[in-house]
Amino acid sequence: MAGPDESAPLLEASGVTLQYKTKDHLVTATYRVSFNIHAADRFIILGPSGCGKSTLLKAAGGYLQPVEGAIRLNGQAISRPGSDRVMVFQEFDQLLPWKTVKENVMFALTASGTLSGRQAAERALHYIDKVKLSAFADSYPHTLSGGMKQRVAIARGMAMEPKILLMDEPFAALDALTRRKMQEELLQLWEETRFTVLFVTHSIPEAVVLGNRILLMSPHPGQVKAELNSDGNDAVRADGRSLSEHIHDLLFADDIEETAHDRA
Amino acid sequence: MTAPEPGAAARPEFVRDIGRSGFGVVEKPLTAWERLWNQSAVRKTLLLLAMAAVWEVYATLLNNPLLFPKFSDTLVAFYDGVVKGTLLQRGWFSIKVLLQGYVAGLLLATLLTAFAIMSRIGNDLLETLTAMFNPLPAIALLPLALIWFGLGNGSLIFVLIHSVLWAVALNTHSGFQSVSQTLRMVGRNYGLSGPRYVLHILMPAAFPSILTGMKIGWAFAWRTLIAAELVFGVSSGSGGLGWFIYENKNQLDIPNVFAGLFSVILIGLLVDGIFRNVERRTVRRWGMQS
Image (cartoon, rainbow over all chains, first blue to last red; front, side, top):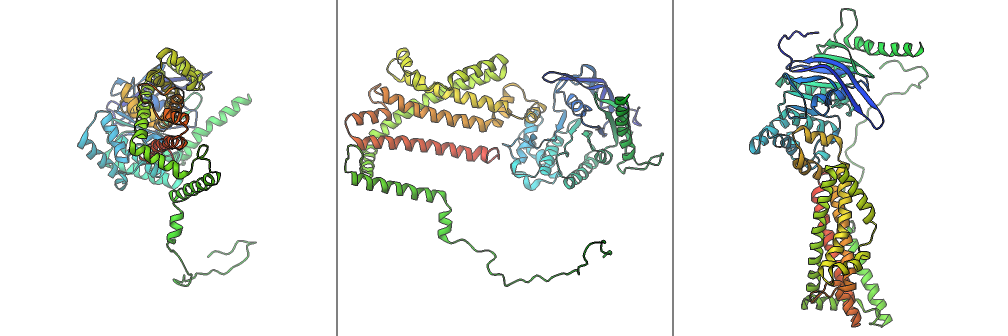
């Protein structure tokens, strides 16, 4: 499954099995998942709830250690959270409510020791401008709409200029119109700066629009079902079906198998 | 236009020109009186004046200054107390003791909570201790304090610490525990750990709870102090407001008793104002509390 890019991958997951404990269960979230992300990829992990995609992202963030296999960034195994991999969450409360928009972005830079003082302020304003929120730089998060909050979170992540941006369904809590707009803006930002992003979603249209490479996962436990290329236009494939129909079939096939299995 | 759906009644379309006049008032400022009445401070001041008037009339009718002095007499006594400095001096004495106990209580609460967030056993210790001591009125410890620390500020500070410590520790701890998982992950993402993590993420995120704890602790402490002074305020010569009230009652100087109570209320309001101010500048401004 090697991509067209023959150089070494930026982020490499090899045989990753993730487990976590709830109060009375040990849950296997993913089982021997492998994938490679290259520089400037818009890599999407797509799957239904319960396929361990968010857990996988947390492992890439360093919040969780695989029980088997490893996730490597530039060949180095990821062992703890670090500012070279910045997370953008789904929740609106990821912004620090006691800091203004500008202070939130600056906080990331100063807390991580990336920049300080004037330089931090300059870079913060630069990225706030990129997400078109300059007019709100001195506003507190609670005065912003959901979409604006997510834009601040994205600006904060991009200001860190991380090796990879880890996005955990960042648009899932937005209304459909705002969501469309945010997807367009994210693509535009990518056109401008060509960052690498690992994006988790459960929405097929979102995956097709945003990704250049889509990893499809099946649930309970999460396993790799397929890895597909996308040109963002939901192109019609050789079999006469569009990419999203193809993905839908792949995910839906599982359900049929499961039902058949249940009846057997 | 497409053909109407079968079953739907056919109606003609229309477009109207909207007139620009003829609908009376669109927007008009409220009258000065209406705006004045919308201010809660104005309404409350009026209430206070009304109560003072009722007090004055009732006391005049009763005509028994020993039991119930007139409002004007109380005001005069209060004014005298302030001008002569006795009330100010007694008030300052109380506040000084209170601040010592309050600050010591806060420090101990910080230590206890720090221990509680660092380890599970510390967490258990805090939960057990607060469950045991939070319901125990500080005044109930006074006899014991008198034996341990004698008739002096030591005993007062001991009961003050008791009244502040548990309320603050309990609220701070529950505040820390309710900091969202997302914020915690954000903090760790940017490389914060240990004391910096507590200082930059946990403390501000839990600040509404911490502030509530400090407010409750202050209210407990202030009541405890005045009550404790009533029992034995005469340490180191002067004594505080509680003792002032008790002393004047013994001398049957009732207007001064009222003046003392008045001062207790005023100081309470003053500190409440300070807390409100802090709230407005922090948690309200941040939208963490409406």
